[in-house]
Picture 1: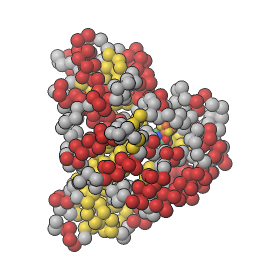
Picture 2: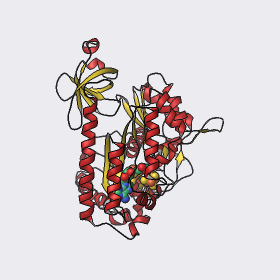
Picture 3: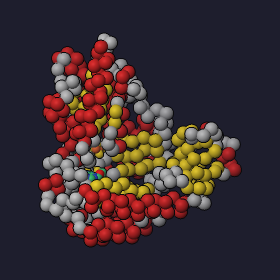
Length: 446
Ligand code: SAH
Ligand code: SF4
Ligand code: F3S
C-alpha cells in the first residue's frame, strides 16, 4: 500500500487493508514482495497525474520482473487521481489492473475477483448511493492495534467549491456518517488500545450525522459522545472550515477537557479581495473575530492554518494583508503552498495568473514568518509542565516519545511502562520540530 495525500487517504489505506485481509492479503514493506500494489493517490497540487505515471512506470518494472519468475502482481490505482483521471490512467498505463475512487473501496474484493477472472482492467469511480462505511468489515482486527493514536473519518466530500480546489470533484458531495456508526468504530479503536482519536473530514466541522431518532448530530455533540468512552483521553478533529465553526463547537473547547487545545483552521489568505475570489465565504475580519471567540473559550488554544500564495489576482497588497493577518493572529504551526492550477477548477482559467517567481518570493517570506512564529510558540511552552501522551520508544536508548496537547513531539528519558499513558512532563528545551522534557519524580520509576 503506497499512500500519498491527506490523512483521509491514510485512513482509507488502512480500511482498504482491512477489506483485503479476509482474502488473505497482509501489508508488506517492499513492492517487489507484494502480490498486489495499491497506489493511493492525491490530486490536490502540482503535477499529480505525472507523479502517478512516473511511479506506475517503476511499478511496471517490478510487475515484469516478478512475472519473469512466475509471480503475478495486481496493480491498483486508488484515491483522488484515480477518481479524476481514471480513464486516462487505463489508456496510458494498460498494465494497471484496477482503478477505484475513494467512494468505492468497499467493493475492492469484488474488483480483485473480477480482474482475476476477466484478466482485463476494472474501473470503478462511481459515487454510489450506499455509504462505503456500511460495508467495511466491523471486526477487522484493528489496523490500529498497537497504535495509541488513530484517524477516524466521520465526514467526506465538500460542497463549498473554493475556486482553486479539486476536492469537491474528487471526493464528491458532502456526507456524514451516522453518529452510531462513528461511536461504534471509536469504541472498537479504544478497545484495541487507542487513546487519542483524530476525527477526519474535508470539512469535519460541517459534520451533521444522523442520531437514531432522526435528529441531526453536530460535531460538538459527537465529540461529547466520544468523550464518554472510557479510556479515550484525547479528541482532535481536522480539517475545519471557519464558516462551520458554530457556537456549540466553540463552547465544547471550553467545556470538554478531552478536546485538545489545538485547532487547524485554514484561512488561505488575509485579503478580502482574494478570499472573495477564492469563494471562501468569510472576510479576514470575520476570521480574526472567530479566533478571538475561540481563545476566549479556551485561552491556551493554539492555531494552525493553511495558506496559498499567488492565487490568480493576488497583488503585493493582497499578499501583505496575508502577512498582517499572520502577525495579528499568531500561529503555532502552518502549511503553505504556491497556488497550483488544477484542471477543471474555476481559478485555473481565471485572469491574473501570478508568475512562478513572484509566488516563490512570497512563499519564502511567508514561510520565514511562520517559522519564526512556530519557534516562538515552541519556546513559549518550555519551562511548563504539560500532559504528554506517550506513544513509543525514542531513537536513543532509554528514551520514550509522545505528544503534547499541541501536537508537538516530546522526548524524555523514562520507562517504557509509560507508553500508552498520559503523564505530566516538564518541558526543558525546544528543537526545530520537537521538545525535550523530564518526568516529574512520581513517574521516573513508574
Ligand atoms: N478543506 C480544507 C482544505 C483541504 S485541501 C479547507 O477548506 O481548509 C488542503 C490545503 O491544500 C488547502 O487548505 C489549501 O491550502 C491547499 N490547496 C488546495 N488546493 C490548492 C491548489 N490548487 N494550489 C495550492 N494549494 C492548494
Ligand atoms: Fe477544497 Fe474549499 Fe472544500 Fe476545503 S472547503 S475541500 S479548500 S473546496
Ligand atoms: Fe489529496 Fe484527495 Fe486528500 S486530493 S488532499 S488525497 S482529499
